[in-house]
Amino acid sequence: ENTENFETLLNKYLKKIKNFEGKVVNGKVISIDHNHALVDVGLKSEGKISIDELRFCDKEKEIKVGDKIDVFVEKVEDKNGEAVLSREKAKKEVAFDTFDEILKKNKSIDGTIYGKVKGGYTVDIDGVITFLPGSQVDIKPTKDIGHLVDQKLTFKVLKVDKERGNIVISRKAFLEENFKKNIKDVKKNLKEGNTVEGIIKNITDYGAFIDLGTTDGLVHLTDISWKRINHPNEYLKIGQKLKVKILRYNTESNKISLGIKQLTKDPWKNIEKKYKEGKNYSGKISKITDYGAFIELKEGIEG
Figure (spheres, rainbow, N blue to C red):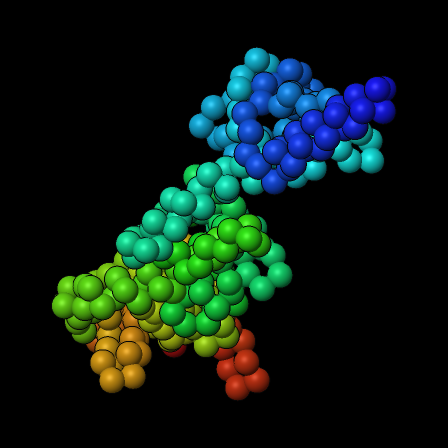
């Protein structure tokens, strides 16, 4: 009789485990310390969730003792006899249907890049961690994405894999779609002579690449300042927002040449009126070479 009762109780317990593991359940927060929150989900033992995970998933409100929250039960008991719970996985599990709907309807979604992982980046979309492959960050390959981190960006959903617990997104797909939709406005804004706003995405020895939102352009070293400069990073830094002038736009190769100095007055204009031959002027030595010295008379004007 005792054996039968034990078997009945065991079967009930095993059934309970089966009903809990891999599922999202509602639990009650019973205590919070500096590192973890203890959550009771109606099992033999409570489960822990790290404070960092709670804060990440529940930015909009602070979780307090007594609050009821949805958690994902990864394991009913670990080696310490505690339930292994996850708030992030619970949010993702609930979000799968929403992301599936977004994918089917080809909608866009906003999120923030916050971390680097193998093969790409992690993106926070309303407390749900999604994966952005490195190849899907931009239309053109980009090594440094510093100017995009912690900024609200728009993405398309590429894949929702419920079995692997993975949501794959793409910024590149959104940019391409946006470019096609707004191609008339884009071409209108990107006319030679127009002034546009952009963000510096990369700096090289010969210039800086500017993200114009729908495409990229290059400011050559000689078009940064009227003053002689040795390297673009003397004047510019990655992530900086600035206005630039479109100098040339090759629609066939989609290459855009931009200028910064062209937005200010050319100091060499009417130079002969400002500086007369045979007269004395004071200046500052800007560079000394084997063959002589360069004197700066005024910013951008050297002799």
